[in-house]
Image 1 (cartoon, helix red, strand yellow):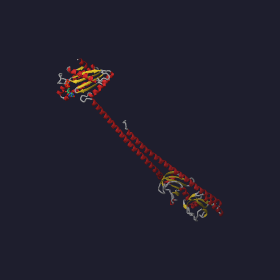
Image 2: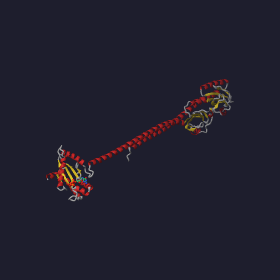
Image 3: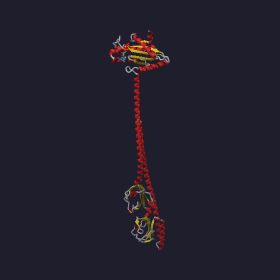
Amino acid sequence: MKRQPITFWTTLFVTLVCVALVALDIERSWAARKVLLEQTERNATNLARAMSGQADDTLRGADTTLADLEERIETDGTGPRELRRLNGLMASHVRALRQLNGLSFYDETGRRLVSFLPQPHREASITDRDYFTYHQRRADDGLHIGKPVASRLTGAWVIPLSRRIDKPDGSFGGVVVATIDMRYFRDFYAGFDIGRHGAVALLSNDGTLLVRRPYRQEAIGTSIVRTPLYAAYTRVARTGIGEFRSSQDGQVRLNSYRPLQHYPLFVTAALSKEEVLAYWWRDTLIRTAGVLSLAALLALFGQRLVRQMRRRLQAEQELREARDALADLNATLEKLALQDGLTGLANRRQFDLSLGTELSRAARQATPLGLAMIDVDHFKAYNDHYGHSAGDDCLRAVARAIRQHTPKRAGDLAARYGGEEMTVLLPNTDEAGTGAVAEKMREAVEALRLPHAGSPLGIVTISGGVAAIVPRRGDDRAGVLVEHADRALYAAKDAGRNRVLRHEDAAAG
Ligand SMILES: Nc1nc2c(ncn2[C@@H]2O[C@H](COP(=O)(O)OP(=O)(O)OP(=O)(O)O)[C@@H](O)[C@H]2O)c(=O)[nH]1
């Protein structure tokens, strides 16, 4: 696999961190939304449970009172004394039960025989009231819960609860009526925290709206039979929760509904999902803005970091290239400084340096240092005859032959000494050895058979003078060695050229 640069991994890392941040935020927000909706469902359910219990208790209190009154009237009769006692009983009931607006007893003609109403009131007939005709026609002795009405006695909006009174022979003997003040429910419902758009209601099983918050007078007594909520209540389950559009104000709410335990009524508690989610939205937007800013900052920072890294890497690369170029240049310069441009052999400077070093080494190790001086024969004539440029070519060819036959041990060095003169330095080699090397070079040049019109032999040849010394420490013997070799070279020239002479032989001769 291709190795990715550090900038790639840094970019990947920063991108991953940014994506992880945003993903975590989305996940967290979604989880918070779920929890909030579950909480809202729980709240609505608890509210409905509390309302149902309270309505049950409220009705049970009135119901028990009515059952008590019914029993009294049926056993004691309706004489003046009994009616007076009944009035006292009614008064104590009304004072004891806050939900009661009043208690009344009407005979079979609809005439009020006795009642207790704390507020000022007037006389009124009730023969046309639903509950009166209901009991008139039916012999059963259950509780009847009527539709909400404006009381004809007090003017207050009430829910009438009634029971039938039977005469001893079982015929219709009138009704006892307890009126429940709707304000009792309204006050209770006002204490709930249902938000600005929540709604709660108490309804009868036939779909009649009895009490509702928010309160609207004209809605009281209307029917919700045609609504999906009522359909769910009657057809799916008596207790449930769902989202329904209100028939009253068109709002969609999360609606929990349940029946009363003992009476044919039900309650609904509805909380606005939009209102609950509005808080969530605000919270989510603020946090998301924060997370996005953080991610953006991180990305910006990462981008800068990567750019810096890229610049640094580039600078390092350029530095490396410059250093390499410089090293190449140095090597070339070094070479140029120590190499002869024409022949490619070491130049005079390097020869002088090597000679000094090798003399010292030879003195330390007490080993011989050999030197051969080599000169092209009749080279002036060659130049004169073939021209200077051909002379250069000739020098190159001779140098090549010399280099080829220079041993490759450390310290062995072939150099151009000056003009057409070349020299070979051979550490740890005595005069005989140096002579043998020089002789091989001579033979090699001769074997080239380069034409030379100015030479009696007709080809290019070289002459060599060879010397060797074992230098002593502290001695400057460089001059001596060169001089000896030089002298031997002159002797070789004198002796007819194309030969190699050792200093020893030259001195002897
Ligand atoms: N073409 C060319 N000629 C050179 C170079 N260096 C020296 N020479 C010539 O080499 C010649 C050396 O001649 P001399 O020293 O008189 O001796 P020679 O003609 O070689 O005769 P012997 O050494 O006695 O055999 C001179 O003519 C120099 O000009 C060079 O680099 N190129």
